[in-house]
Amino acid sequence: MIKFLDLQKINLQHQTEIEAQLLEVFRSGWYLMGEKLKNFESNLSSYIGSSHAIGVANGLDALRLILKAYIEMGVMAAGDEIIVPSNTYIASILAISDNGLVPILVEPDINSYNIDVSKIEEKISSKTKGILIVHLYGRIIFSDKLQQIAKEKNLKIIEDNAQAIGAEWNGKKSGNLGDAGAITTNDDQLAATIRALANYGSNQKYVNIYKGLNSRLDEIQAAILDVKLKYIDSENKRRTEIAKRYISEIKNPKIIIPEMPENENEHVWHLFVIRTEERSELQNYLAEKNIQTLIHYPIPPHQQKAYKEWNDLSFPISEKIHDKVLSLPISPVLEDEEIQAVIEALNNF
Image 1: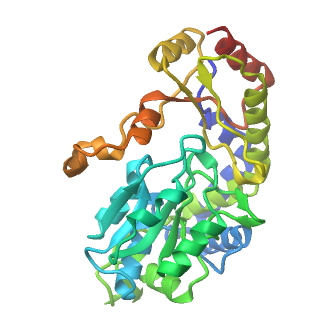
Image 2: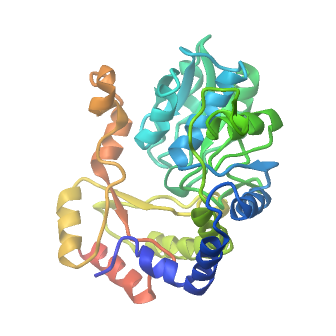
Image 3: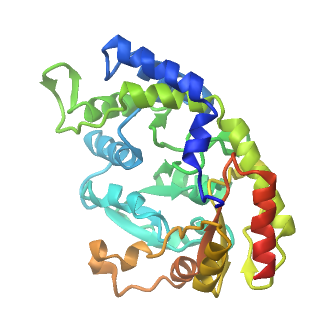
C-alpha cells in the first residue's frame, strides 16, 4: 500500500529526539506555558523572520485570535467584511464568522488554486477591513498588486499559512507577509493582545482584561514541533523533488497537472493536486493499485449547510475545482519506487 501520508514513518525518523523531549516534559511536571513553548516560539519566529511567534491550540484558533485581537484594538468591528477565497478549507471562513465579521468570497485562479488577486478590488466596500489569504496546497499567494490594494484601501493582510510553512516570496517566508498562525507577527500590540486573549483574556493570573479563549499550545506539542521545525526545509525539498517528477513524468491527456511556479521557493507542495473529469473512476482505479488518494476538498464552503445563506450563490471556478480535484501521495518518506508506481499508474489510466 502506498499511503497518502505515512505520519508514523515521518515521525519515526526523529524518534530518538522526540522521545527525549517527551521524557523531559514528563519529568519537568510543567505542561503549559513553560520552557518548551518559549523555545519553540523563539525558534519559529527566527525561522519565519518575524518579531513574534505565539503558540496556540490550533490553526483555526490562530486565525480566530488574530481577528479577535483586531476587534479589541479597534481596527475591526462586528459587521465589518473580510475578503477570503471561495475555495478554501472552511476553517478560514469559520474564523471570520465566529468573530461576527462577514466573509466576502472571491473566486480562485484555476491554475494556481489560490485567490484571484484581479478579482479582489471589485469586492471591496466601505466595510472591508482585511484580506485573509490562504496559501493553498503549499503555494504562496502574494504579489506587489496585493500589497498595493491593501495599502491603498488600508486593509490588513492575514495569512492562513497552515499548508505553506517554509515557502518564500521575494526571499521572505510565508507567515511574515501578513499576520499568520502559529501566530507570527511583527506588530507588538497585536502580539500582546493575542497572548492575553489566548490565555482567558488575561496577561496576569486571575486578572482578565478581555473576554478571551483558552487556546494555548501545550508543552508536549511545543517540544515535538521544535524537533520537527529543524527538518522542515529538508522535508520541503524532498516534496519539491517529488513534485518535479510528477510534473515532468505524468503524461496523460485526461489529467491536468499543477504548475511549478517560476520561482520554485514559492511552493512547498503540502499537497499535489491534479484535476480530471473522471475523478471517481481514477480514484477507484488507484485504490485497486493500492495507491491512497484524498480529495481536498469535496464540498465548497458556499455549498455547506453551515452557510446555508450562501447555498444559492454561484462560484463556478470553485465548484469546478471541488468537483474535479484529487490529491496524490506526496511526503518526504515516499520511496523512489513508490513515486514511480504512482506515475506509471496515472499514465496507464
